[in-house]
Length: 442
Figure (cartoon, rainbow, N blue to C red):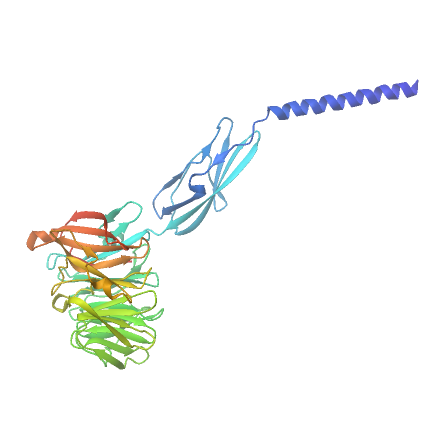
């Protein structure tokens, strides 16, 4: 009898287990699948400091779903979408979690945040002499628009006075922009990404700056209407003029153990970078400088294009099918640029100051590449200032122009975008104002 009771108990227990398992399976069958999430651009995107970006992942079903957004490990949102306004440049990881009764799905966004003035390029504008100072403009790749007077917008308590000064040169060195003015204006250093001023050489009646070349983290050289001066980048103080060269000096570049400079009286001057002694000169050179991917330094003047070996300072001369003029009477940087993709340079056929309507491309070793103009500017427009630059990000040639003629024609401006391989015009951004563009800065 006891054995029978035990058998009944075992049968009952087994039945109970089977019933429980069946009930659990039925409940599991009723649970939804965990959320299915699809990220746009595979979770990769870009943003700019100070500008909002909205992330909106796609969900197959949203009923009964809760959400969580975390930025670098800190929860920032609980909605199905998330608006993020970055305040620091760099890469940011944003995690998205969608949860329902069936479980949790996690996804990751990686956002590359550009500095406020990083995703684009600059234009240094000399300004309308006697009517106000020069300025700095910024072209944004993402919006395709140009923003003006960006330095003074970011530094409302600063200026580039006196009004008689003109901005002719700017360059990027060690994550700073150095902006130089002629005619008694200041030399200004600013953060590359925010444009906040970090230091300056004050305007002075003796100042007449031309170009800048960085040497190391704390030292640079600046050229001027009266020679070359050392510049301490930590204190932003100018030292004693270099004694081995004098007179008006324009463009300057350092390559290898040499400094290459353009002198109004001597042409190309090659200096030893260690002691500033003169290594050689080449008379008649007026325009510089461009550097191709092989390291060669290029300059031009008259009917000569020079290819210079930075290791030896040896010069190879190529004949130019037109006359290359300089701009000493109203100096601006040389109208020459180099590709960063191939060993090729772009050289404007200017008049005695500027005014080119054609630009030639010379590919190293290909003499026939100089036969015909590579770019012919649209009728009624002509190059102004340095006027030609190579955009290394978009692999395109940029040209600044004004309406041909004089007077009010100078207020009719165009920023022209050309294909670097074909010379075809890709885009023309027209704008108005007496900017007098001096130089493209990348």
